Length: 225
Ligand code: E4P
Image (cartoon, rainbow, N blue to C red):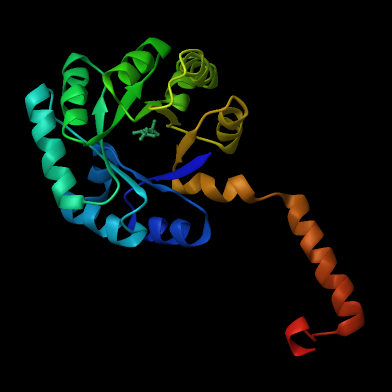
C-alpha cells in the first residue's frame, strides 16, 4: 500500500512526511482554495518538502481537452519531479488523458464513483484512478465495495499500468477495508494518520514497560549503561 497525504497544509505535510513512510501528496481545487494562497507557489513548496521522487498531484479546472493538456504541461513544468495531473473523468478528460500520455505527462483520473469509469480511465492511459470512498458511503453506497470491484476488474484484465488510489476517507476503518480488498494506494487527510497507528492498548503496553524498567533501574537509560 502506498500512502499519500491529501492536503496542501504545509505544516501537516512537513510533519507527516517526517514521521510516516508516505509516498506523496494529492491536492484538489477545494484543498488548494482552503489555503487561500498562491496555488503554483504552494505546489512548489510542497515539492520542496517532499523532494523530487515522491508523487505530487494537482488538479485541472479546465473542461476542454486541449486546455486540460495545456494546463498539464504548465503545471508539470512549474512543479517538476514525479508529477501527475488530476483530471476528472468525462469525455474531455479521457481525450486529454490520451494526449497527456503521448506527451509523457502522468494522469490521476479523479472523481471516480463506478468501476465502469475506472476501467475506461485505465484504458485511456491514466496512471491512477481515485474512487471517492466516503462520498459513496455518504449516499448509502458501498465505497469499499466499489474499490474492490475496480481492483478485481484490473486483475481480471491484467491491468498493471493503472493503480487504484482510493480517496475521500473519513476514518481509519475505511482505509483498513480498502487495504483488505487489495487497493494499491490510499490518499488520506492528515487527521486520519494518527488513527492508523494509535491504540489504547499500545499506550498501556508502553506504560507497563516503562514502569517495570523504572522499578529496577530508576531513571537510568540504556544509553547510560
Ligand atoms: C482525492 O484526491 C479527492 O480529491 C479527495 O480525497 C476528496 O475528499 P473529500 O471527499 O473529503 O472532499
